[in-house]
Image (cartoon, rainbow, N blue to C red; front, side):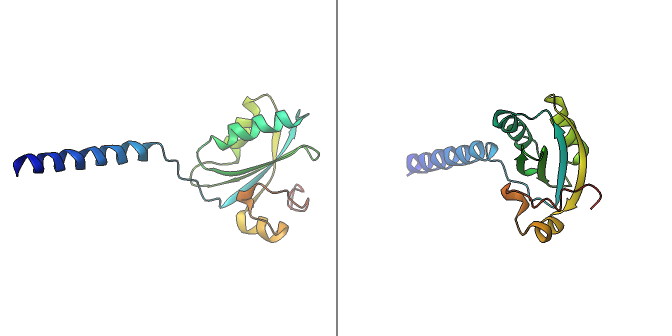
Length: 133
């Protein structure tokens, strides 16, 4: 009877250890409450856009990224409790692309203007991306 209890406890501890180890590799996706629109120069091809998107998505707090090569814009949905437009702009700048924050909206304003969810990285309408709006 004692041997069976020891085996059960060992199995239970092994399962707990595996669950804890697996939990360390799970990244909880942030919920966007803000959208930053960066006016960016130097993006010439899809490879540029992919590099920017990959680096931004690796940042804590970034929930969605859209690259608009034709409009020279980077649209980033983010959790304002974790990151902000200055950090996002600096990240893009560190990749060698000149940029400035053209606009910053709430996620709800973005949805109303575009009819789209900012976390999906779908194209903007052009209205929300006009500086000063």
